[in-house]
Length: 378
Ligand code: SIN
Image (cartoon, rainbow, N blue to C red; front, side, top):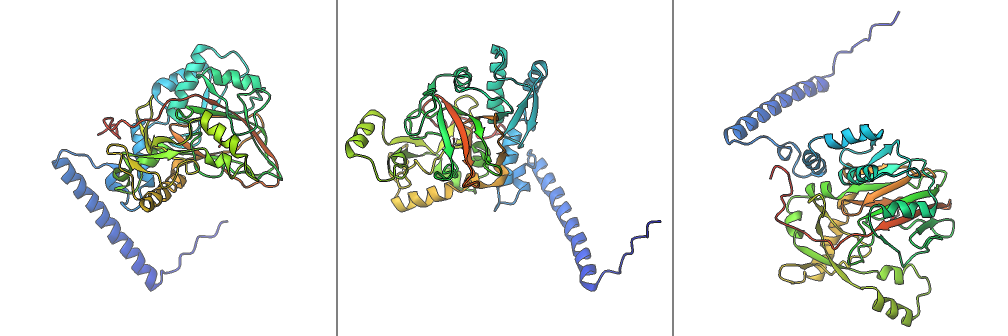
């Protein structure tokens, strides 16, 4: 027979703590009631802004993005289409990241299925498929269903020139472990990237994705107003210096710069061209940290101020609230929207090898449209 749980008399401290907790709870409930009454009288509803603490807005960013999604991970329309197509969603985060089960990317990709995948990408920002094992040509053909592809000039390509190999081993530790969105050094950075895992380390090697829209909505108060109209200069210097030990011949560097636009300006706040949502758009490796300027007046920020602001912005995506994490297996495919997420490949598996093959779908020139409200409710 189970013994009755014996409850000791609370100590003096605990008696006080329990009484204080009850008093505080009562006072907070009353506060919220008063707030609701006051807001109702003013014809307003108590929104998440009043419920989250002002000094820690990460949860608020996710809540506001979820509100904009209609408080559902995918729309009713997309859910209905998934049922018709026999696709099951496994959501990894509230506002981003879903594994799509029941899709064979080697099989017949009807227009209907491709349109569904594209809409799933727009709603979920990054989508995943398991056990695909595409050949390079099949991966390229899949990418082409979503637009033109960009070849990548600064890393080893696969047998198919549109494949870039992201390969690490005991001589080449993982270096993609900083929050970034792909190829911001291009005038028209890629719409999305499609990576397939070929080889995984025995442990680790996950990739994290962070919601750029939620991140913008959850910024510390005042930061958005500070950066709303700022642009910065991005360049591919990093590929010509740190990634080329021993340096490169001057003539080669000059010739590359003459052929591929060098030093392109992009907004820090980018409007997604398809969903209309604004997001924080930054790549700390390519952005010149001292290069921020006001796009309306053309006036440059003081270099110190510019650097301090960039430093602050580079920490925004790192809040776990905005993220989902994907564990790769050979044959896993990730398709992320570079206009809606940042990603970070953990470098936690050295000296083991890890190999991904990536294609990038061509995108368009980033812009910011201040006339589109940040929130549905605005
Ligand atoms: C990248 O595209 O930055 C690399 C992604 C990864 O290696 O997981």
